[in-house]
Length: 150
Image (cartoon, rainbow, N blue to C red; front, side):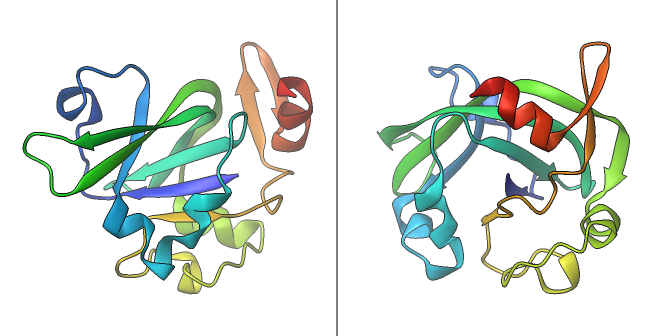
């Protein structure tokens, strides 16, 4: 699963009103920053979570695609958006750091399971596979969810 840093609460529906299902964006400059090298690993069908200023984890998305928007009025640089649809929810919002600590998550850009400066995306791979999520009325693990969406 990928985790995205939106702690500045960018309003994607407003900024990218010409595009549906936008859950995150990066400029080409940000993509080329080594801090965000995991962006290049994202593919259709991957699981994603966007963390906002609350630092809470609550919603799991299925990645639809990455769209090149080019220059966007009011934004700096060449912009790419990540599009996704809600596929699962946590039973209750969880603090990101506490949740990642609970599952012993380790990522070079998440020191002490907190966001580092200049960092926007981390591929946590399968480290949260045991996390229980709600899909409709069912409670399943992320591993089971991944198998269902293949």
